[in-house]
Image (cartoon, rainbow, N blue to C red; front, side, top):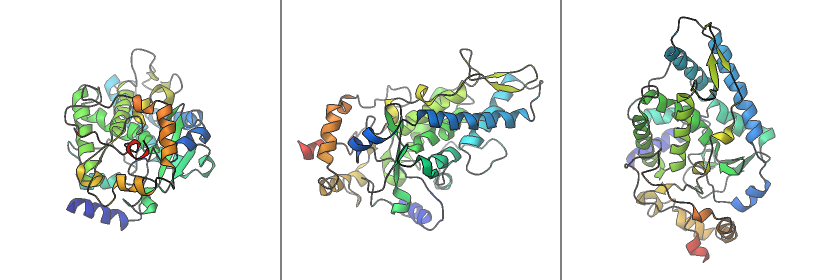
Length: 333
């Protein structure tokens, strides 16, 4: 708890424009599912623009004598810079085996693509749904606690998952020795959720975060794959994009924290001052959670399997307590 208090003090005393720690996928779910427009084409267009910028930047210094592995590493870094780099790095970042408090603090600010989603006013309410009075209200001041939701086809996720794809996906790729050790990547990701990217700060272990990390890793790993590659290398050692990137090919139900619920440790979930059960009970009528619950039950959201260690993006170091905030059904049935 001591380190959590230090972390929160550093957040509040800074001028960092932070994204929400986690997404509230429950409040007003039945309403924004009906009103939020599909963001896929708009986000695809912006993403492909950033990928083209990364390619153009790489091609300023392309060389025919570079190996395929060297080109792969250089292009991956350029893509990371344009989509996820918060600090204007000029060389490939060092990714520590274990994330400490200092590394976690570096993640507070918005990444380039995440900032574009959250800050672009023309996207607000049509493509991006802000939820200020959320189940996490009380954990952080409102300035830092607003949740945002976007819709990719019929999947509802937070913009933070887009950042996980580009940022932690890139870290996975480095940790794995550039795609040679999948298990090392997964193990690192689980440690971050058990540590300063998750449970050590706000007692939340997000399975959806890890799925986004894993898919981002597969993206970086497969930049020049043998089957329908997104990029190819010219005889001059330059790079060209062969087709459009499409988010709908990467995002599935495991990115949605309603369908793939987080795990909460006892300290916060049961005993903490920001008690989700207590919040749900006190705001049952205000937010009409029982109406939302019935809506989700009718749509079959509760029939999804819970995460298991056998899932490819997980290992056996995950929380064994699968309690989560969606037991609102006990207040409504």
